[in-house]
Amino acid sequence: MMGWCLVIAVWASAAGPGVPIPEKDVEHQEQVFQRLWGTDFVWKFDDLPAKGGVDAERVPYSGHIYLDRFGGTVGVLRKYDQAFHRGRLLATAHEQWDINAYQQPTTQRAGLLGLRQTTRMQTPNWHGHCNGWAAAAIRHAEPQRSVQRSGVVFSPADIKALLAELYIYNDIEDLSGSSSIIQAGLFHAVVANWIGRGGHPLGMEADPGPEKWNYPAYAFESTATRRSDRSVDVRLTLTYAKESQGEFNQSPRIERTKYFSYRLDLNANGEITGGDFYRDSSRIDMLWVPLLPKASGQPGHERGNPHIDVATILGIWRDSVPEETRRKWLIVDPAAEDCVEDAPATNLLVPVQKPGGITTEVVEVSAE
Image 1 (spheres, rainbow, N blue to C red):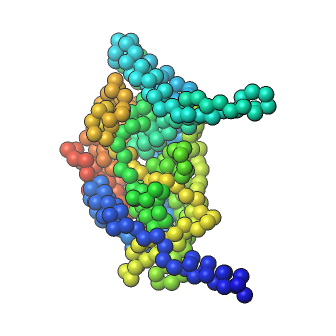
Image 2 (image 1 turned 90 degrees about the vertical axis):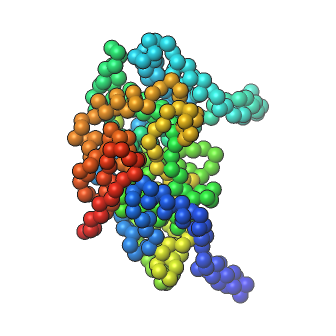
């Protein structure tokens, strides 16, 4: 009888209200979406798409993460210094400092049969440019042709390395809320609004814990089962690009998927107010969107390499990608040179990018 009572108690707990979305997180999402899209963030569950993603030609490339232990982006920065600093290794020297600046105590086994432990300061094996690559692959079409500057030829692979260096410490918009890891209700609302309504990729910090692994997420599908008018079970698959083992002139598209299982709580208007992940669900730390790169030292890019120039690197990228491709690569917070006034209406929300402003207008079209 006690075991049966325990089962009932566990079921009742699972059926109760989940973790609510704090009001400050609700306000933040609405403010960010209004600023970057020019339209309202949608909370009503039935008004959100059950699937969505980017067009095939906009799937983010699988780039290299340039682990610090293997030199980070030192190789391409030597070429950058040759082209723009007359061979003085300024950008290179900063990267050499940076890849060794964040060492941590690391315990290793040594001696006969590994019975003795030693601890020394060492760069963690996961430190690298994964967030720089993820941001670049979200904001930029893959470079297609080599570009020459001051007699130095930058291949498409070199240009992708420069972009990864440009974005590694640049500002982002954190969409994860105020909890240590993103909550179920907020997770669903952010994915459905950004990827579902807007067809806009998101950065995903994929693994809760001390190690940080970032990837560009670009598509999702979900199914829902109503438990009541105030509760719905959701199963969702989120597709993202995995990094490549090295940088290539033509990058592969390495697809991976995470599976999520959660319950959403709704209010009387059918709006998402909270929820809970189930035990069999994946969990992630963050969802984020990369913003327009700033010069090193400015607020939002305090730690960036001070010897690389934003306009220079973006100019190299533009010369490497056909204009027709760049005009289809719509993003929020674009550079003035990348604004597109006659954007095609291909998604529920389409940013129409106009010169002279960071924010975007929105064209609303009906979903089929």
